[in-house]
Length: 358
Image 1 (spheres, helix red, strand yellow):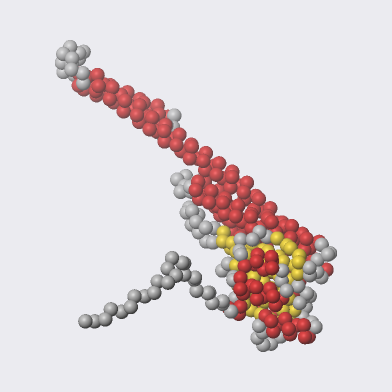
Image 2 (cartoon, rainbow, N blue to C red):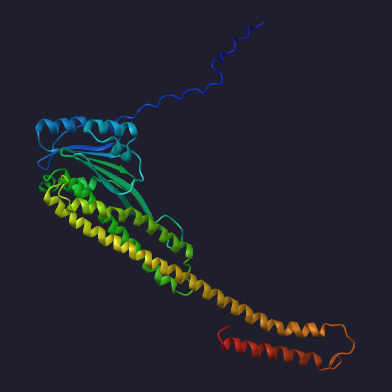
């Protein structure tokens, strides 16, 4: 007789099993690029973020630029401990959807920028038009740390342009902050130009006969403009502080460059405000056009109903089963009825056509 295997132990039954510990992902996985710059030139070789900071402190010159993409809490904590970042700022850098702002923690500036990207779309369809992301910048005397959220927020081109301009990069971490802010604000102008083209195309189509433009499409663009305004407008105050405040650790030359960025930002914000007003008027125009079209359709329906009522009325009268009715047994009664029906219907058709009801 085969032996029955022992039953498994159920000791501790009823208690929820503890989830396995998540294996932390190395910080290097989140670092896109890490470089040391001395006198505006990049030092050869590869560095970890800790090695790069140690190199700068040993030399007593230059700064570190660390670029991260969507780090988790463990990775950001590692970077924060290495560079002495405040825990509140580090927490904001992990969680996206932050409002554009500028905060100062002792000698470290923390700037949040919202990035935008125009998405190609069908003008008549309801779809995403503006994609948003974020760039957070930590700037100290010896380092710049950029944290990106979103797929369109790459800064490789900005880094390459700065490395091709050592004189600008020699101004220190402030040059990196200015270059990134300038890049982001230029993208605002680019997106507003694309949206302006959409608005102008919609305006032309609203007054085009047999237009396929719907109220939903216009309202969707208006909602995307609201999203764009939320990303762009709050940056005005941080840029004003960066360009005018002498208390911030920024060179005078960088503040001058940032004034130009602030001017470009003002231009983009004014465009967005104009879009909001134009799209509100456009929605009213679309609704008015729909109302006019409905009135036209109702007039056409009413005209045809009036014309159809004539033969219906005559047929209803002569459809009554009375023995003694005028012209009922007259040989010309049937043709005469048709003549009267066609004459009245023709007169009504002519009248409605002349009054543009048909």
